Amino acid sequence: MNTKIKKSHKRVKNKISNTFTRFSLSALVVTFFFYTAPIFINFADKNFNNKEFTNNSKNILNKTLNKDKTFEENDSWIQSDEIDLLYDILEENNSEINLVRYTTSEIDALFKDVKYDLKEVRGTKLVKPIDIGLLPNEIKNIGNTKKRKEMFIKIVLPLIVKENNKIRIDRKRLFAILSKNSNTNIEKKWIEKKYKQYGVKQNDLSTLKIRMDEIPVSLAIAQAAKETGWGTSRFALKGNALFGQWTWSGEGLKPKNAEKGEDHKVMRFHSLKLSVRAYLRNLNTHSSYKTLRKARSDLRIKDQVLDSLILSKHLDKYAETGTEYVEVLQKIITQNNLKDFDDARLLPSSKDFESLI
Image 1: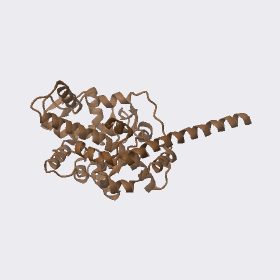
Image 2: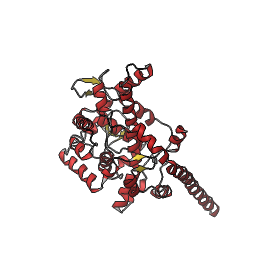
Image 3: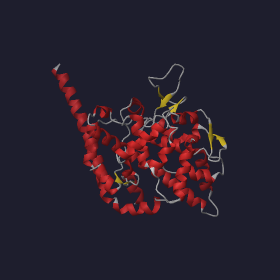
Image 4: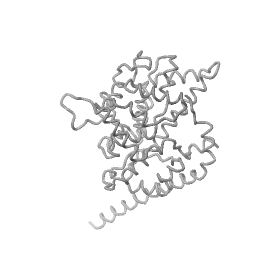
């Protein structure tokens, strides 16, 4: 009996040792590139910054999955297909890679090792490229509200900034292609793919330019916080669902308080970053957020920053509570000073660094 206990004890110690070894290696890599990052900040500015121009929305994804009509900015419609709008998300959702769910203490240790501090981020506007795939189960046990919020923001902030970066790069590429007198076959195929991805009719470039754009980081954090209770909801912990998007045909979690006859589910994602990507795609394509996209486009035309407090006014259809939901979002943004993160930039990861050499 004692021998079994000793062996079990040894396995646990080995597991803990291996975990911290992985974290130590990760910390060394991230720290190294943090100190070399300033070299590439100017590069990023020159190449990626572009000044161009119910829960009802929880229906968004389900309407996409059920091939409902998706209205264009000019009120014409096309038949949107799940594979077209969400092909990249669906492909990764079927990934067979098992992500590791770290504990809050392990994640906190990583953040300390790489000196990831929100106060510093607010000042430097630089975010460490840390990709946490799953929320820690223990986040719901953090009694200190301030610490729980800080843990949640630190996890989702890099994911939101990174997904916004992808859209920014695509937008820059789109405008570069449109500025040419003629385009290559590769460029034409790329635009065709984007038409489908954003639910836009062929050759409707004006709508594509409006839809292919970022969502303020502060607004995304506020909605994730509201929808998950700062990362403590069952949907967030079991399904990586940060924004409570519904599905009727996809894989998901059944709400416990669903009324009889309701067969919708909250869509499940393989990782947190896919939930973020689906959320951005949601706001950029569904007819319920047409006025948000119009307001965002107006800000672009005036060369003004994308103000989350202005754009949040157009999210009254995201929840059955309507304007009350908007007020809650605005309160979360202001009380937690989330606008400090709107112009945050992601430091290059080791992979980014290698691609530049």
